[in-house]
Length: 509
Image (cartoon, rainbow, N blue to C red; front, side):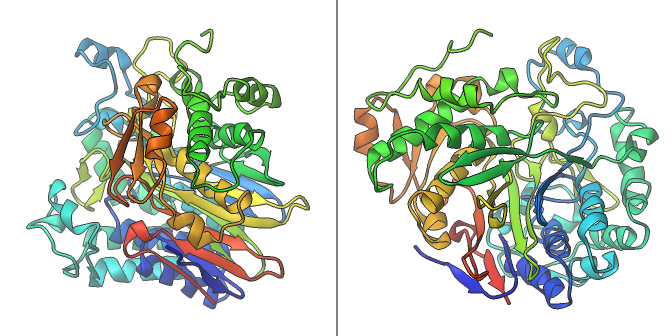
């Protein structure tokens, strides 16, 4: 299923054609890829609240001659009390309907930081398409329509059918306030006041006054003749890089259709991720060293599935990317965590709140334990690829909870190792490791994971013979929405939006 699109001097890819069009409008007006990315994301916060929103977090990688990384993930409020949760009988963070799983949302601080450093157009121009759609209405997508009944707010009342117009006046007011007053229009405005009231002591005014976006050092690994970049902790981006480092030294079959290909990539993912719950926290270091890659690669057995428990001593989201005519590339991922997130809505603005706090641990003394001012481990895994001379090759990412690194491992290997086009790499059937749970619990029982195969994949019998428990799933059900822009020799752009997203679009100029 090939859906590669080509452009000469700028391209935007996202899950929604309305959002991609807003980003392309910014490029047409002389804006940068950063302007396009913020405009695209802003529209998605209006039209795709089941995937992302102003009440969620954001990570981004930017290539502008060198690679920069932006961590705009929120921190738990000053009232965070893990002992109270344990006293109530919780052994893990509550998934829904509990404000304690809602760190202060970082998305808007991420926009401000990205736009301040790399933007060319006024923020009022960048947010204008999103404001218009929120105020005047947008046609509900076939992905959003079945889920609107999950949210208890007048914006979603009565349920919606695909194509029906929805307005979100509170979101429009909030975006206008951001355009006029920057972060204060959000964190100190109508939304911020509502969040403090909802928190009931979980947050203080100082928590909302502290900026949440940090420029940090990206992680990098060499694979297939390129450098692949992702986010450092608290992101799980290291899992993508560790898996790629392992795979790069294995004898892969020439064709991805061979079951051994899926086996080797799947084992690399399991060996990289089996101890994630123990090692990933916001201050973790040295997770992708050459020695660690070599140690874990040596554990891969081409002939059988490995039992990974004991080897050590010790969701929903949306992704978008943009490249402008000057060669700047932005790889941006923004999320509520699980679908609509916590299923808690700030009532005045209608902004649904994420539940990214589910990444915290409730084990006393754990380095990722829930606590005041802490950032939880994150599934968000944007990626960016450069050539040996440092020039931009690709921006790529996906939604998919714990499976994000697994999906990107397949897409990037197809692109760099097997020379597939973006459309081929994005559209090909996928595997993922799953437990049948929330999509955020893969690494609780890594030896009990099932290799779920998307409809059309031909690996089932071969994987079963190698010892993998296998299950089939319909195409597009739980295998992410990946998007990719590839910079071809000569500067032509080739992009693909995931066909699984139904209304996604890769559009250029």
